[in-house]
Every structure is written in C-alpha cells, then in structure tokens.
Image 1 (cartoon, rainbow, N blue to C red):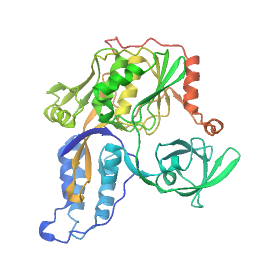
Image 2 (cartoon, helix red, strand yellow):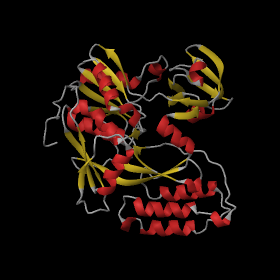
Image 3 (cartoon, rainbow, N blue to C red):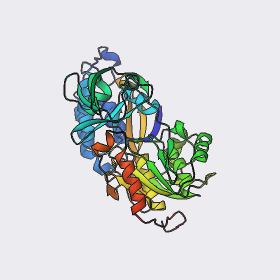
Image 4 (cartoon, rainbow, N blue to C red):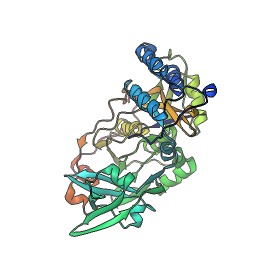
Length: 418
C-alpha cells in the first residue's frame, strides 16, 4: 500500500534488533530499499548514480543474521547523504503519531528560554495535565538530572517544578495519549482572532467540517495564523485551508517531477483521499495546485507565525499567504522540507514499518522552491522569559504589536501577475 503525504518528522524512532534465521525465506530489506529509492526518487538519475552504487554495495553485505538495528543505522546514514527531505524509514510508533496523533509521552511541550526550560503547552488528557502542570511552569530537573525538552516529553519521571515563588515535585510518567491537533481559533481582542493549525492531516479538513469551522470564525480586522510546530500533512487539506483566504479560485504552485519531460499536466483534484492523489501523481509530470471557491471570504489583514518545525504543506500555506495576501511572516525561518513524500509499506523490516520516498518537488507560481530554503521571515521573534512564565505567548504579543506598527498593505488575491 502507498500513501501520499507532505509531512516532516523531527527525531528518529525506536527500534529493536531482529534476526532472520530462515535463509530460504530471507528478503534483503536493504536491497529492497535501494531499489525503491532508485526507481521512485524525484532526483535526476545523473545525480544519484554514485549513491545507487554505494547503496547496492552496502546491501550486499547484509546477511540473514544482520540485525534490524544495524540495517537501520547504516541505511539512514546513507539516505541522509542525499540531502533531501521526506526520505525516511518510519517505526510503527512514528506512523501512529504522524497519522493518528497517538504517541507515548507526558503531554509536555517545552523549550529553553534564557537558560530555563519553560513549559509552553500541556496537552489535554495527558499525564502532565492530570499532574496539574501548566504553561509557564519551569522544569528545574528531571529524575535529579538537568532537564531537556525531549526528556520532558518522552521520558518523564520525578520532576522538580517552579511556579512563581513556589517550588514542588511531581511524578509524570509517559503513557499513550492522542494529541488534539484540530484547527482552533480564539478571539484575542475585538480586532484580532488567532487561528492555530497544528497539522494538515486530512481528517481535519473534511469539506463540511472545515466550512463549518470557518463560518464560526469571528469577523475581525486582523488575523494571526499560527503554524508553529506544524509538520505538514495533506496537500488538499492545505488548499482547503487557503481557499477562504484566496476568495476564489487561485493557482498557487506546482508539483514537478524533474526526471520527467513535463509534458503531461493535470490539476490536483479537490479530494483528500490518498489513492486519488497518487493516481494523478503517477500519470502526470506537472500537477497544478489550485484553491476552489469557498462559501466564505476572509478579508482580514493576516500575520503568519512560523518556526523551525513548520514544514512541508505548512510551508506551502505560509508562502501562499505571503504571495497573495502580502501577509507578514514572523518567527524564525521554516524547515525547508517541501517535497511530495509517498509512503510505502515495508514489511521487509517488520509489521507496521513504512518508508517515505520524495517523488516530486513543490514550486510556487513565482518559480520559488522551498525545499532547502524554507520560508523566510519578515521579522525574527524571540521568547521573553518574564512573559512566558506568566502564561503569555511572546510571539503572539509581538504579532499584535506588529499589526499596530506596520501599515496595512494591499493584498494581491486578484492579481493575475502573481
């Protein structure tokens, strides 16, 4: 089974060793990986000749007794040498997290600010929320050692916490939770609404559900679109998000196969189903991405927040809001990971394992490719400890200030030249 998705992942999964002892049924997973990448990757053949040779040579060293851990370590290192995104091997746990939002963790999202580990968010119905932790708390130590964001999220244990002048200890053990990544909105003040979009997973952008969501968004003069931490998702989901902002049909970019002759063109159908998108991708060399007319037109002045984890479909959305609405983009430059990753079942490594191979590259109508470069910001933002510890989001405060300071620009939704 193949699945198409534009999503990025930060960090590697967990795996265990395995041995193939039945020589007569052994299938070399390394060789299968080399073959799949050689056949499917979007890079031109001349750019992968040497890599393919090295891959086949490494695969020839694999025997039925070679552990899965060894194969993963070696192949991931080799895949990294190609220097492209969406070329990944996924552990079943990673698959569950990316596709269903299910993961074993504490529910703590934290970052260092001025040398202190600050809790930015506590997910609902998580071990951390049940332990009473909240945004703005400082994590002083975890299991009597120096804290780190990854430890706080995945390992947990006995934590020493500071909340204002109060200090206390709390036990937070990770467990399987489902993270709520649905779009949400909140009216910050009478003039500004904040729309948070943690993910562009297809399930959140069912046409009826999405139109109902947009219909409820208050009419305000200004809007902040928060794409921080959004690793991407479904291309059609991204186009549906953009539709009410574009206020009509708008071509925003293309999916291109550099290895092809670019003679077969099509428009990506407004269909969230992976198989429908794959059918178009397989049969064409250039695919046009267009928004469709939406029941509601959002005419608010827009500012977009992005960070280093904003990737893939989220980068497409951020760049489109800049190109067609002249939206201000604030934060830090995005990940620069915008290719078309097609997922393949990979039973050669075990049940539930999958491999993603990038088969096309995204390019805006202006000819800009975001792979490697990312979305650049108009203004770099920083978190202020004094604001974060009282539960205020420094970046949102700066975005509000930016609205007041920067003059409104004429948006370009109707500009054919763009």
